[in-house]
Amino acid sequence: MTRATSSAPSQRMLRVGEQVRAAITQVLQRGEVRDPLLEQTVISISEVRMSPDLKHATAYVTPLGVSDHDTVIEALNRNAKFIRGRLGPQLRQMKYMPDVRFRDDTSFDNYKKIDELLRSPEVSRDLGDSGDGDE
Image (cartoon, rainbow, N blue to C red; front, side, top):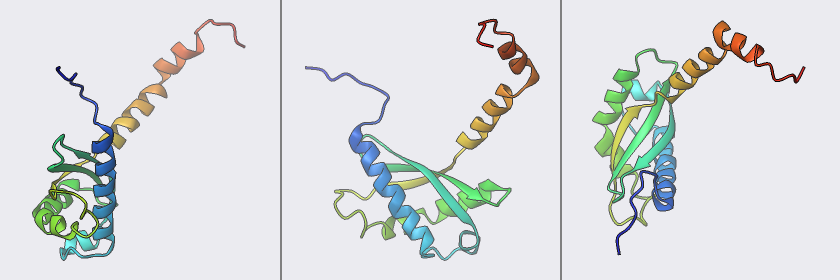
């Protein structure tokens, strides 16, 4: 019997991803990472996506109040092995501790572009002239 493949994450991947996100957040909040850039930057972790085998975690982060996100992402990736070691107490139920990769979360930029498009005069003109008679 063959299994149907889907691109959607399983419930287990979602649950473990949320646990990893909470654990990374705790490590960063406690200030365990001794990097001057990370100590003075507030970092928001919006999502952690797990690989199907749960051995790799990709954390999507947004550094708040910093114009250059790349330097913060590089600092997080430099300290990824240390952070992985600190995840152990919160994730001791896992068979393998996942390798953590940090990526810049661009979803907020995408939401902003969509909002700007919806508020543009061309779109509002088209929506205003829908002719559905609901006035």
